[in-house]
Image (cartoon, rainbow, N blue to C red; front, side):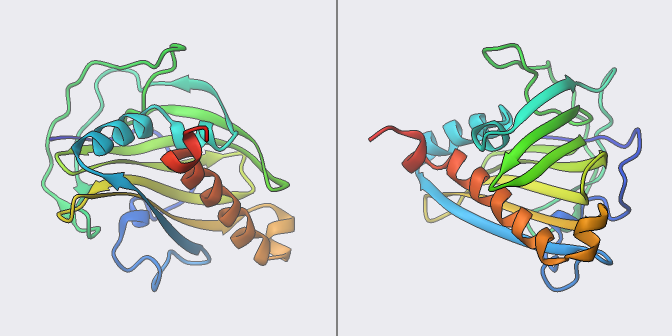
Length: 216
């Protein structure tokens, strides 16, 4: 089991880790709009392993048509502190000391403390933000990471991306998030926050789904 959190530096919101809270949809952080969605990816150990690998190689973001730039792993070893279980409850600290992994084009895999710039458009909605990986977890049946905004985004908040291998043998991809409007347009028109999130989720889920990843 591998877990890592990154505590150094500053995100632009207070409720760090709240995207994994069990009661997110009922009690989101103040002035934030919560959202969650899930997609069945298949079943079995092989599907779980391949989906987990894709997740940590940024596939939800890149496959949705977004561009990753200025990907910078944390300097030095990441502090492995409190993380969260599947129900959003804090768990005991553990230490994470792992070698940095890279994909085929040399981009570092998801790792706690990594910062990046994300840009693009989905459904006519702008995506342009500086982000940081808040935590990463790799467990026998659950792999994922939490991504939070640092700045330059039209919203402020957090996303959690998780691949789960259930006892039923089904493999699911689940995304949860909360967004607080920052840009004047989004503050004036709150429905745009939900529409933007729906477009992002649709892109993420399609990117991870074998149904769309495999040519017919």
